[in-house]
Image (cartoon, rainbow, N blue to C red; front, side):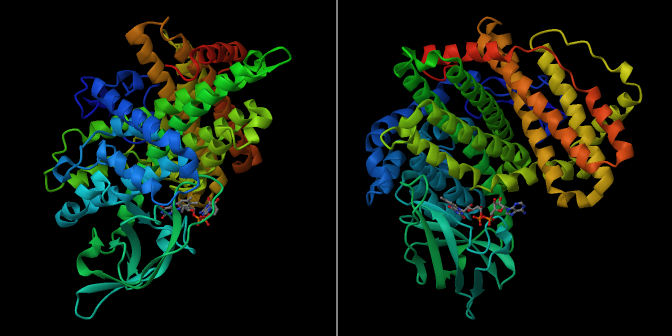
Length: 606
Ligand SMILES: Cc1cc2nc3c(=O)[nH]c(=O)nc-3n(C[C@H](O)[C@H](O)[C@H](O)COP(=O)(O)OP(=O)(O)OC[C@H]3O[C@@H](n4cnc5c(N)ncnc54)[C@H](O)[C@@H]3O)c2cc1C
């Protein structure tokens, strides 16, 4: 199933395993070579430094003005970002961009995420704003807009959500009708919560042609009948622009259609997949900032005669935060590596280059949703616990954690709410299994055979590093596959309506991808640098797997208690428990060790 491919498009010699989307469930834990932050090239690191320097120079000193939405400021900063090449990274070279790889793009996203308002404005421009034109634009549309979007001369926005259709995006009411002479489209309807709308020049807007065919359109600011409504007043990311759009007989030329008529869903969903994975990457950057703030404050603040970082309950928070960052980072860069490996070799001049790119992104939609959910919830918890470290000061505006914790909240809502993404994870995986794209049934059959005589299951802890963790993750994969097969057997197609069941499966799959990614990364660090140098990643992986493994089995038991009849229940729980391994893991001392490392380093330092 796994084939080798070059890791990145930017000259890295590392070979990674090109697993299919969702393939982590079926692979032996740690058997795939994955992209990790330790494998980044000098060129990629240089891009990261460019973004970090830009933030320090142009954004950090102006946070109060940005948050107060000083007129013209966000647009001016975005234009400056364009001057140093930060806007054109994902734009093909032939259209004035850098045609860069997704790994470098992740590094930029991480760096800009120290300030939520800037991160969201930047992300809306380079991601959901520009990428529809990169991936679906005609040569003329790409030539017209992309060079200017890459420099920041033009700013982009993406308008999908309507007052009556958010999660249910395809229920949009905005309509588009072609004029009798075939020269212009007339759009009517409204959009809401559109990022960058206050100053954007180009909007990707979705409307139904003749009230039926969901279609993307490019609309320029100033188009007749396009009105941008007033700025919303928000809980967080206050420096970003969020406005409604009103389309009242809005007239655009006939060539304003983006992609094919009736194929707007392909644009909407593929663009969201990119946004989801990027959101997870951004959560890593913001969480690293939280840890830096939390460590700094806890070292300075004294109570009971000593710095609060010396109290074990504060260390517990720091240890958990650092571990969760490590795990999210492992998942996010693993996925960036897969996207790059798939994109490597696509000739940008090929007639089907756009389709090949879209297919590569679609392949990893499961991972994108997983990273979105895990990253946004990790950041939410991280910001909240960091605020707690600050005590009362955390609640006061003078301290940045007050803003960061407000800014973090949005991530669970946009790019598809976490509920919608949770439904997508098992839904897509089961659909692919049924289509034969993923050989899930082979694993399920193997599990059923093992359960006939569980004494034959090899319980010997595998040799080598993280043997117990690899075994736990492998066994958890079997238990999850088995439970999923029971759900499918019982409900068949009707499983799509069983949201709590799908929610448990989603959480299990998320934890499996997280465990698998942390284990794979740590094994690679050990192989490259030795066990001594990998002491902290090893401790983080052991700590994380101990907790995640427990969560998986608790979730599955809960699911079976709801799903199974009395006579089946005992047997099925016994079957699940066959794969439950309780080993002694001293999580208290692991956390202390990780926290000590973060405190001494002043933040996240791997
Ligand atoms: C600051 C901000 C910026 C934004 N930027 C943009 C932008 O640039 N472009 C754009 O198009 N949109 C944007 N949005 C909109 C955003 O994507 C939507 O708010 C989001 O998709 C949720 O839609 P909704 O608000 O209508 O909530 P709803 O869809 O009404 O959902 C309400 C609740 O019900 C849950 N729910 C809905 N359906 C289901 C279901 N089938 N099963 C279980 N639970 C369900 C949701 O998870 C949620 O908890 C932005 C929103 C905000 C707040």
